[in-house]
Length: 263
Ligand SMILES: Nc1ncnc2c1ncn2[C@@H]1O[C@H](COP(=O)(O)OP(=O)(O)OP(=O)(O)O)[C@@H](O)[C@H]1O
Ligand SMILES: [Mg+2]
Image (cartoon, rainbow, N blue to C red; front, side, top):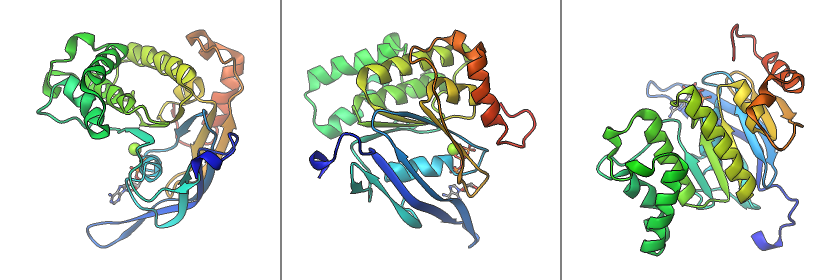
């Protein structure tokens, strides 16, 4: 049981996980693994790797949305065998209900979890304000830009108040300035809430800036190419990015990729 677990035990333990997909023309794609990894409670793990190496697959396995071909994942000691209420997921493409307003989309988990309506609405408004959309609560998804839709999806994941927030390139559709702002907001939220965050990004700089550890994945089928503990000041400001210490990390991670021009 969860209560019997020592505080120091990992919140997520991934053991020999593999995922193969069957394609429509009958072929089998080895997408991921074997991969083993533990994720410490309260950590901020960022994941980088080449396109198609299995990053989204790994996150969906953690969230219990797909079934592994081999190996297992434990969350708080329990085998993940289906969707988990303790895991909130922000998908690579924002998945919003088009016939519901931004506010009602954020409120969806509250309905599922049976939260009291009035306080849930207040919380949803707060979360929309947090992602910079206080004035857009009554808009429908098609009235919002891609980046705004993604911010609604982030607010919705936070509404669930999950122990673990799993985010698949959540800032990919945002412009550079909003992206920086959201990074700082996410760090603040992580520091205040003590949540565990797993965050996929294409940008090495973002991975080092946000992460307490960076998982670098190999080409498909994705395995661990490197696992980098980031030892930088806890108080992160954007100035840090231009420091020598920061450069040591980005250089180490970039060296794992043979692609020219990899960020
Ligand atoms: N449902 C599926 N059916 C068949 N193959 C799939 C399926 N989903 C993913 N794949 C394949 O598995 C591999 C890993 O996909 P995945 O989406 O996990 O990669 P990714 O690292 O997230 O890529 P990107 O950085 O482009 O988002 C890819 O080769 C992809 O084509
Ligand atoms: Mg992906």
